[in-house]
Image 1 (cartoon, one colour):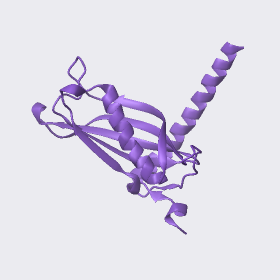
Image 2 (image 1 turned 45 degrees about the horizontal axis):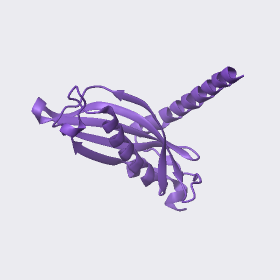
Image 3 (image 1 turned 180 degrees about the vertical axis):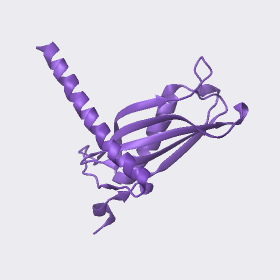
Length: 171
């Protein structure tokens, strides 16, 4: 049985990107633009999704973005991501953002943000591809794997509820 059929470990999907925050990354409050941080998260999570799918991927949704503290100029921002779970044609990627800022005496990484993203893999003609399973190994990976199913069920239920509400308004 090939690795593609068996699936991939969470560890094999992990990615990391980092960047130093400069003046051009700041809003009028002197903190990093949220959109700039979201772009970093999306790129890193996309790398994880690509590693799992082995094909081109597109972002379907970004949800549960939680900003815990501001990021200022001079900070070194690190985004780490891994695929939490794959479904038939979609996958959830979790991302955690940390920062260090020697100018503020933050010398060890501090968690500043987390997010969950949904991706699908597409073939060259734009058709969705079937994904191999994710194989969680550690207790933490198993916890994230189980929670991904709960988040997915909530996203599907919310989408159905909002669609029904829109249908009522249109009637």
